[in-house]
Length: 418
Image (cartoon, rainbow, N blue to C red; front, side):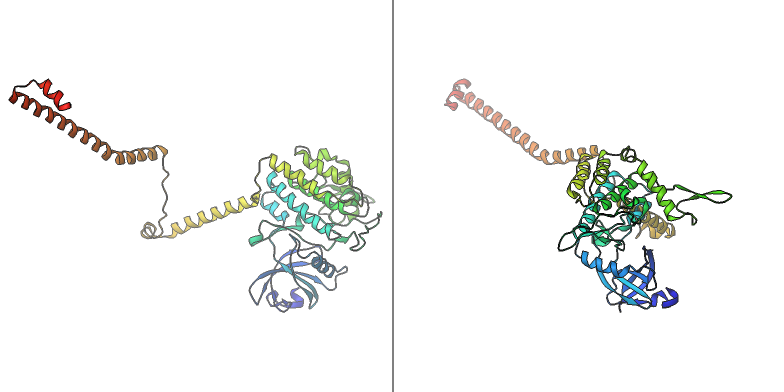
C-alpha cells in the first residue's frame, strides 16, 4: 500500500477518511483504522487490490447494504475505488471473539459461552431471514462493539456468503454434490467436507463447533499431522504451518477426525445441551429451516438452571476492570514514589475510610439512645421526688394542726379525705 499511496497518513479515501494504521486482515484484504477528517470520528476501512484474482469487496458491500438495519450488522459509510484499491468504509468495531478468547488465556466460563451463544444464534438467524447463508462462521468473524455497543455482538466478513433462496418466489437452491469446501475447515460442517452444497443447517452446525471450541479450548481435529510421501523419504509436517501439505490433504484429515468423533465424545464433560444442539443441527434436512427459538431456549434454560444473571458481564469485562484497577494502583504508587514527603502529606495524601466494627456501631448507638433518654428519666425521678416531698409536708402540716387543736390525727385525716 505504501508504494502506491505514499505515506499511509496521507492516504485519504472517500474524500474524508484518512488512514491511520493497519489493524487487521480479512480473507481478501487488509483492514485499517481511519479518521473522518471532518468530525474526527474513527472508522474501519477495508482495502482490496483491484488486481486481486477473485475480488470480493464489491459483492460484500452489496450484501452489507441488504443486511443494513439488522441488530449486530455494521453500518456501511462508503464504498468506491481509490487509486489501486477497492475500498469499503464501515463502523469501527472492537476485538473479535478469537482475540478475546486469547485475552482470557483461552478460557471462557460457561456464563460467557451461553451469553455469546444467545447473540450468535440471533445474528445467524437474521442473515438467514434475508435469504443468505454466511458459510464462514468462526470466532474471528464475530466482533464486540465499542462505546454504547460494547456488549453487542456483530457478525462480519460476508465475502463468502451465498444466496440460498429467491427473494420473491422463496425457491430454495437445489441440492448438489462435488462442491469444493468453502469456509474454514476447523469449523466446517461434515456435509461441507463431503462436498454437499451448503444451506442454513451448515451455518448452525459450524456455530456448534465454535461453542465447543470455547468450552474445550481446542477441537480434536486441531493440529493434526499430514503424511507426505516422497520417492525416498517420508516427512511429517504440522498441518497448520506446512507449506508443502496441500489444502486437500489437510481438509481430508480434518474431515476424517471430525466424522470419527461422536458428538457425545466431543461434548463429554459439558452440559447435555451442547450435544443436543449439535445432534439437532446434524439431523436437519438440506432445505429445512432451523428452529432458532428452540436452540436459543436450550441455552437460555441452561443459563437459568445454573443461576446466572444476564448482566452482560463477560469474562473479559472482569479482566479489563481488574487490569484497570491494577494500572490505577501502580500509577498511584509510582506517583507517590516520585512525590516529596511534604507534598505527599498534603495535597496528594490519600484519604482512607476506616472500616467500622459492628460492635463499635452498636455501642455508639446505645450511647446515643441513652443520651436522649437520660433527661426524660431525670425529669421523671425529680418529679417523683417533688411529689413525695409535697406529700410529706402535707402530713407534717396536718400533724401540727392536730397537735394545736388537740384532735386525733386519724379523725382529721378522714375529714380531709372526705
